[in-house]
Image (cartoon, rainbow, N blue to C red):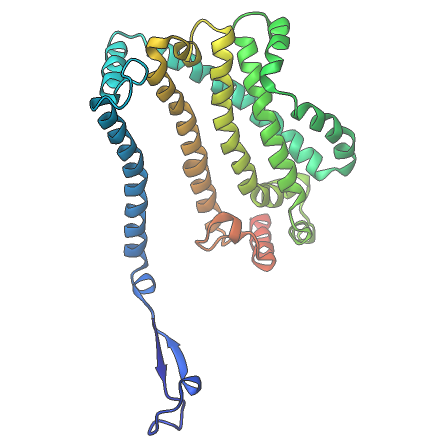
Length: 313
């Protein structure tokens, strides 16, 4: 909120608009920040729920009015009723667990290997020069095309599915980690060296917090792609799982709905759980000062002060 006030010494006359001082008065956002944030959050959640609910209602209306062929596009109520009956009969949860088990195992292997190699290649230019051309060439290979290779290597069973997910996740995490480490400003590294940080301290107090926001973005993308890959793989070379369930025409629609559950859960854990914990940890030492994590790592002086505080502890 702004208002125009006369300049000092000119209270009696009314000066031109250009000669007035503009004073910004605090508005509701500044006076009641918690209330404003709560109302904003409520609005965001309402929109997130209202949009898909509206689409489902339109779908139901189109099915009831016979605007859609019910044999091909059944109503949401019909899909829910059929899915509920199968869940009560115990026919859904074994497939959900089979897919979730494969995704979690492959995601863990791909994330760890991709992060370690990305950290190494981002830090050492010679390692990057030796491995980056080869990995770039392998990255563009369609991952589903590797399924026959993994079937020959591991045989039928869980091995090929887990290997396919791990390979897919590896490339997303590797690229984001290497790019994040290479993008760390030299001032952040200099701050650690000034305070005598060793290799482990440099990683823990400089490389990890400075690169983690970009790494988490790659991890979120990899979580969604992992579910896409495993569903496609299960349609080809599996006897259970959500991909095999979708292949059954009777379970086509609610099988597709269930595939979003693992991806949404993993994305939630990465985005809210991990990021919120990291922000709280670094606020305790004054790095972020209540700001989002990426913006809080931009100020070199503040970052150097926080690094020194952590190294002296």
